[in-house]
Structures are given as structure tokens and as C-alpha cells.
Amino acid sequence: MKGLVVRSTGSWYDVLTDDGRRLTCKVKGNFRLRGIRSTNPVAVGDRVEVGNPESATDEAAFITEVFDRRNHIVRKASNLSKQSHILAANIDLALLIVTVARPETSTTFIDRFLACAEAYRVPALIAFNKTDELTEAEREAQDYLATLYGDIGYETLSISALRGTGLAELRARLAGRTTLLAGNSGVGKSTLLNALIPEANARTADISEAHQTGMHTTTYSELYPLPEGGGLIDIPGIKGFGTFDIEPEEVAHYFRDIFRISRDCRFHNCTHTHEPECAVVRALEEHRLAPSRYQSYLSMMQDKDGGKYRAAY
Ligand SMILES: Nc1nc2c(ncn2[C@@H]2O[C@H](COP(=O)(O)OP(=O)(O)O)[C@@H](O)[C@H]2O)c(=O)[nH]1
Ligand SMILES: [Mg+2]
Ligand SMILES: [Zn+2]
Figure 1 (cartoon, rainbow, N blue to C red):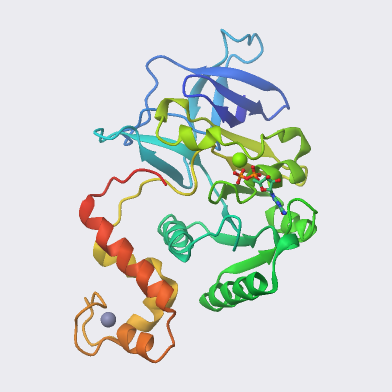
Figure 2 (cartoon, rainbow, N blue to C red; figure 1 turned 45 degrees about the vertical axis):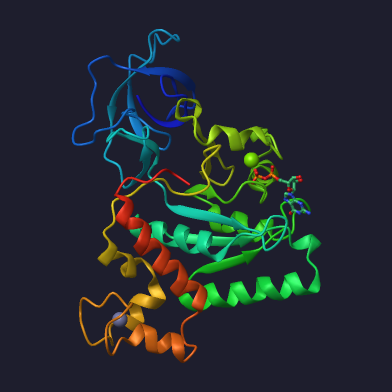
């Protein structure tokens, strides 16, 4: 019997079987996933084979096979470990919840997130939340960001998870896709989850989430199926993507605007920092590239020096 992993505690997995049952499964003892050094062989979003489901009790249901993944996101298992922990698999869309105020989402955070989405080849959608309580200046700041990211090529939406504004449009974009829900703490992820899927029953304004970030053993992920098909993946304590392997010279590939402009740089291996006849620096000077984007690019280039495995943020 095939099914979809919808909840993972690290040792137990809830599987929604194709015949509509929800089974709590374990992974068969000697089962290992080839090619991945991971602390968990199965993750939320995985399509799996469940053996012996007819006689399944909590003790008898076993995941016997994980089908090929389109993608998966990981984070380092612990500070010193080279092993990774798979947070979720088979993601179609990354939904970034951004608030311009209360709390303010920084452009650095947005740009890092978008670059990670590019690296994972997952399309990203930006939803500006809490639009019900914006001052005029905050509205202008949001419009500026919507234009900035719209021009780069990202879809943006304006919503209020609390009031329900824009949720029909958002729902239409999410239908039939498996979406990773992301954003800083306090931007309204749980509120949105509950608005879209009342059964989710997610706790809102949960300050304890912040304390979980560094406690790798407590992290679990959950996939909440949407009535329209597809579902939302929530990973409490994780604000965005986890770690990924990316070399400094690759960073520019994941900044769409910078990458486009860089075709006119004199040197093909230009890092857009000190080289002569750099089209990126010229575009910056001529206000054709946003300073915030260039700053984010530089900051990602720099923390690459710290090693390939960074903590999930
Ligand atoms: N005014 C307003 N407040 C919101 C909205 N969405 C969420 N909030 C509030 O923001 C706070 C944090 O929301 P929560 O969903 O817990 O954020 P999370 O940390 O991203 O899961 C709560 O007090 C929510 O009621 C919104 O659209 N408008
Ligand atoms: Mg929350
Ligand atoms: Zn250059």
C-alpha cells in the first residue's frame, strides 16, 4: 500500500495511505536510504510503501520503501555532525510570509530565502501579511518591496490571515501543490495555517517555538492536506530552508537580477566585488540594481567562508 508521510517525530511517521487511512508507522530496522547520510531516512512529504497495512496496528505498520524524491530540504543534525536531518521532501512551492512591520522582515532574510529556493529549484511565492494594520508609510514600504520582487520575477500577494483578505487568491495558488510554509517568528504562519485548514489547530503567537530552534531532537514536521489537494508543510522552529551546499562563486546564480546583469561583466568569473568593468557594480551605481539585493548577495558570499554546513535559520 502506497501513501504520503504527513507527520514525523523522528522515530514515528504518520502515513496517509492511498485508500484513505492514517497509519502510524515505523521504519523497518535495516532500512537505509542510499546515497544520503541522514539521521532520518524518511521525511514529511515522502511517498512511501507501507508493508502489511491490512493487519496494521501501531506495532505492525512499517515503511518498507521510500520512492524517489523530486527534492528535499535538510539541516545539519548537530553542530559537529556531518550528517544531515531531512526536514521535508517533494516540495512544489515555498510560501514566504513577510510582514513589513510587527515584526519587520528584513530584505536580507527575504533574499537569503529566495536564493535558497532557487538553489533547491523550488518556486517561491511571497505573501505580505498583516495588511489590515498598515500605516500609510508601511503600506508604501510594502508596495516598494512588492515592486522590487515583482520586477525580479517573483509572484507576490497581499493578505491578512486574521481578516481573511486575499486568502481565496492564495488558496487558488496553493491548490494541488505541496507548499513549504516559511517566515520569521510572529509573521502569522500559524494563523494562516488555521485560516486555510481549521483542522490544523496550530498554536498561534507561540513563544516557545523560539526556544526549539536549537533543540534538534524536538523538531517535527507536519504536512496539512488542503481540501483542494496538495498541502502545507509546517516545521515549527524553522524559519526557512535549512542547510545546503553552495559555493561562493555560485551565489550569483541564485540572485536572478544579479545573474541577468552579470552576463555583461568583463570577466566570466567576476565576483562583482573588485573586478574592473563589472556590470553588476555599474548597475548598482546607475540604480538599476537595488542596494539591498547587492548587500544580501555580499553577505551570502561572506558566510560561505564559514563552511558548507550552516545551521538552519
Ligand atoms: N493584525 C494582524 N495580526 C495578525 C495577522 N496574522 C497573524 N497575526 C497575529 O500575529 C501574531 C503572531 O501570529 P502567529 O500565527 O503565531 O505567527 P507565527 O509565529 O508566524 O506562527 C498573533 O498574535 C496573530 O494573531 C494578520 O493578518 N493581521
Ligand atoms: Mg507559529
Ligand atoms: Zn561583475
